Each structure stands twice: as C-alpha cells, then as structure tokens.
Length: 170
Image (cartoon, rainbow, N blue to C red; front, side, top):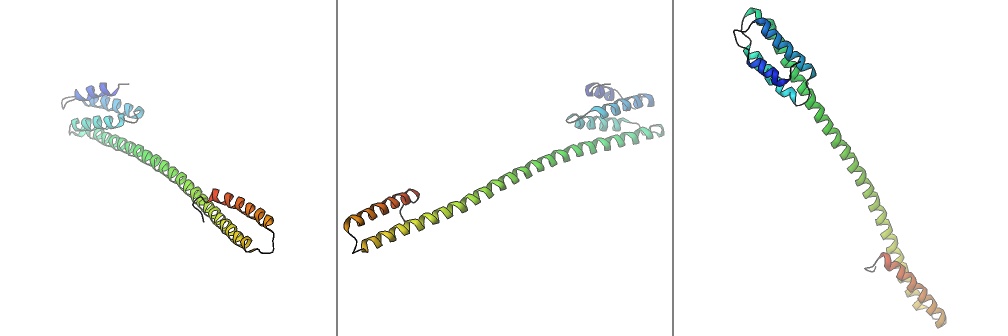
C-alpha cells in the first residue's frame, strides 16, 4: 500500500492522456489509504483527493470514477468533521468537569464562611458576656474583696480566651 508521498507522486504523474485503468488504479490506492489514514494525515489526503478529482477527464468512461472520487471526498470531509466534533466534545467535557469541581470548591468555601461567621458571632457573644460579668462583679458590695478578686481573675482568664478569637476587641 503506498504512503501519502508515493500517492502524491502517483497523482502528480496522471494527466488527461492517462488510461482509465491508470486512473482507477490510482483511485484504488487513494481509497486504500483512506481506510488506514487518521488524524493529521486526513487533511493531506483530502487535498490529494481534490487534486485527483481535478485531473479526471470529463469523458463518459470516467463519470463513475468521478462520482466515486466525490463520494470519497465527502467521506473524508465527514471523518474530519467527526474528529473535530469529538475534540470539541472532549474539550466541553473537560470544561464541564472543571466547572463542577470549581462549584464544589465554592460550595465548600461558602459552607466554611457560614461556619466562620457563626464562630465569630459566638465569640462576640462570649466577649460581651465577659464584659457584662465584669460590670456585675464590680457592682458587688456585700462580697468580700478576696472573693471579688478571685471572680475578676476568673473573668480576666475568660477575657483572655475571648481575645484569642477576637484580637481587635469586641
């Protein structure tokens, strides 16, 4: 079976004086090559089929060969189109997968943001509660000073814990 370079040479050697047998043999080689050619070579083979079709004499004995050449050209064009569609579909699928993955990450981040907001609200409430308790302890009058100092130390410890979560103060 000829490769595309040999096939191109065979087509280039054809002329209007070549016999129908010579044209038919060249077409058979083109058709055989079309069955095994793939990928990037299909475009080149389509070009060779086009050149071959232009060289076919416009005589009744060549009409069948001319129609076969047109059919082969159409088949190769459809094969090229099918390959392009497959590549586009593969790209679209990759983009779809990426979009889904990004959406998952966005959903996770939104979930984390909600949890972080709830944590911040809880820390704010705890900080307010510590401040309120300090005020209440300061208002104690009947409690002795040592008990008041112990309560203040405990409240300051709670305040220190709150400040870890809320370093700017509440």
